[in-house]
Image (cartoon, rainbow, N blue to C red):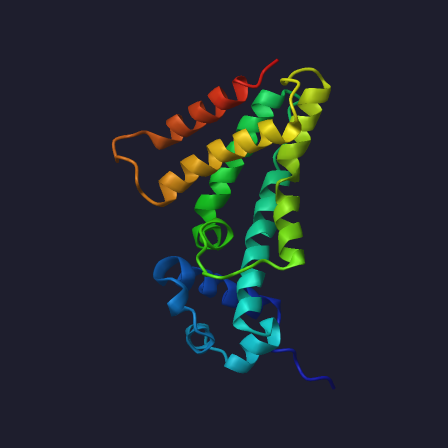
Length: 196
């Protein structure tokens, strides 16, 4: 009879969640494999078995963050109106960042100094942005968005969403601002600026 597998996907996910929380809350110095294992009530052997090393763990966090981003952005139902679709993607971007704050800092805020994503991680990041590029290229092809290189519009939309979400996550906005309304209005104004 085979021995039950103790280092499974559920343990891997718990380790990733806790590692992301430690990085986001206390910084890179707080992420020791021994502390991580203790916090999740497992052994350092399990951490090494599942990830290999601390840099590999951070790489896995990066991939997991973009995997979740990818899933949420791909789940956005397209309307055929590129302006509306860009706004919907921006709203999904914010929802994802708020749901996974601890991963967002690994993905975009250099939570682990010196971290360089491996090829697989870089590919995961690019894949997560594919829905945005698809909406933009389809909108340009249909003559509904400005006839400029797709990356110009895509980066503008991404920068708008990312900048505003970063302000929200870092709690640098005055509390009296209705951020939800301001965020959607900014997305819509930016997207409308690319209308042909």
